[in-house]
Amino acid sequence: MEFGPQPLDRRKWSVVESLVFFLFFLVMVFLYLERLFLNRQAARIRWRIAVTGTRGKSTVTRLVAAALREAHFSVLAKTTGSKPVLILPDGQEEEVRRSGRPTVLEQKKIVARGARLGVDSLVVEMMSIQPECLRVESHRLLKPHLLVMTNVRVDHRPEQGRSKQEITQSFSSSIPPHATVFLLEEELRPEIETTAARMGARIVVARKKSVNDHLDSSKNLWLSLEENTRLALAVTDFLGVPRETAWRGFGKAKPDFGGLKAWRMELGHPPAPWILVSAFAANEPESTTIVLSYVKKRLASVHQKIIGVLNLRPDRGDRSLQWMEACADGFLLALEKLYVVGGHVRSFQWKKLARAAEKVILFGSTSPQQIMARIVADEPSGAILFGLGNMGGLGARLVELWEEKGDPYAI
Image: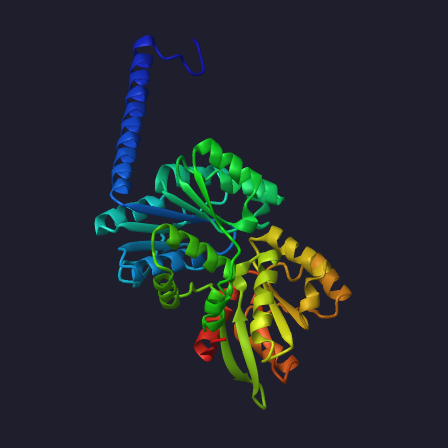
């Protein structure tokens, strides 16, 4: 008597093979039909515009969409910044509801939604980080006519690389065949030029030129980041939107929840003036340094003292390490004090840094009210409180508190 699994006889094995082949055939037919459907939906939209890069994607998406609306384009836009939002053709916003983790497959729904609405323009912030996902999202799902690259900053190092060259190569994978690629003059790199040439894509460079008259007269702090506005203008110029119309649209655009904003409050006993600035969404040190320089320039006559509150996310260990390196390399020189909250605060490395730098204060509370009470008690005369690091978790809750209690501050 034989024991153990017995081999299938030839007839049974033939049935199994046939079933596997049939299931494989059904899957391939489904994928072919789905791709055909997506291509037809995308073809109904005259201008498909995708926005990628490290920082500023949500802002550029909103600016381009607002300028096109002002020029009487029918526009559907989507941002995936601090809160994923659909911006409908009438300018109303609809939060994107997710039942699970974010996935690039939701971009298929946006293309289909745009086709159903009959829009002539789709402006979408790309979601992917890894180069292989960027390629699929761009080449297979969005198929943009225009691809906007905001900038290349060192962030998401495990996924994209530890140098700007590696990260540039990652973003370059999103360049689809025969597209028009927009980027800042200072962000033009050989890796982008090489990939664009291979894909038959055209590059449009947003040259450094003065937009200061408009920016200086603007009361929107988030528009003061000249790079984002310059890039959005390059896109609207290409699409034939008059500059005056574009600027009117920019002025009507709503900032992202995580966008650069400021509020004024009277805090403490007796009350002292505070200006609270949210730059949490800048995330990494290089972008935050750029934003901080803008804020200091715009608020120099109001307060000289700038206090930082750095929110660390527990699931962004590499970014926390970046902030530790930046603090050790001179970032703290721009701040009077830095309160560190959120994840990794109790780690040995941060405790060591706090002992070495007196202006670094580790605060373990997870309550926005307690954090604010501690900072205000330590600075009874008031200051500029500059939020940085991460929007997730405590960052978002601090912004919600500031929006509830503070008055919007136009600089």
